[in-house]
Image (cartoon, rainbow, N blue to C red; front, side, top):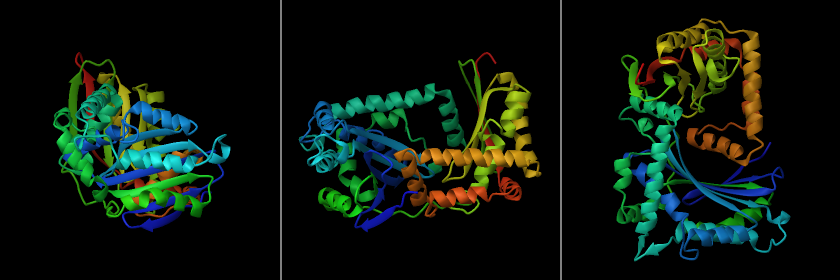
Length: 424
């Protein structure tokens, strides 16, 4: 297992994960901030404007030429949401210099490029380029519309938005077209000027390197920039409940209806019963041996697909199905019946064994991908809970039927979103 060393500095934390498992070095910046309605729109535009050019590399072609010179390094940005946090990520992946033909100064040149892009952006009259902003606004609006075209994702977004209305968790990371259009060169530049002082900053370095040497190299380029980063408190789930389930119906010109059910649970990554809830979710609907899959899809042929997902930081559990609209009532009934069976102790040793094996396999597969390894570290940062891969696997192996039944009784149905075709 990979050992993680965390170095704390003014304004940020540096996570060093030395391993000989990969031939690449991954540098990951994560900027974490509480979800806020206006910030969402800036977040959808700023990181991608920065990747378009800097003072030294004034356009995307110049940046790409430098990445090619660095043995085909890859540079990307991403905006995600975890519980009530917005996360802007920059990722630089490069071949380990020890495997490169021309490795002289390769690591330093990669850090220099990333420093230039983040801290010396391409400006016109001290403002971020209005042309680049207009381009990235178009792309952000296209992502927003593309999310609506993906009906599974759209139904899930609408479910959360409906159930957690006026709460940070209910905000869509894509924002709104109106909010995106309102972003100007002046407002985005003002946001950028305060950006590094208002974020919780976590930096990850993973690959085959000597930790002290890598830390020294990194600090040479970035220490001076991170003096005022914030450290936010881990997510604390607040007591919250609906008086009754909220069930929303929407009609669109689609052939296959989408029925998504939402459930509240108390078992987040921060709690000791999280692994038991993972197993519960697996038996409920996450795998092809689950109760929902074997009954709703296989036995009664009510769904084209059905699966469930547990959000690790918030504890929100979703069941997602694609159905004929006429089967909505029966599908809902069978899903809730499957949960009721677990709550009443109808869990077999076979279900328990299959689910634990499937979850174990998922975790082991994550160890084969640098991003999978870094995702575990993010879980720990957001929750404030230390849990190594070894501990996670061991805890899973110890989950009993009684544990599953106990946590299942925390699961509460809170509402649904039903997207159906116009003719139905």
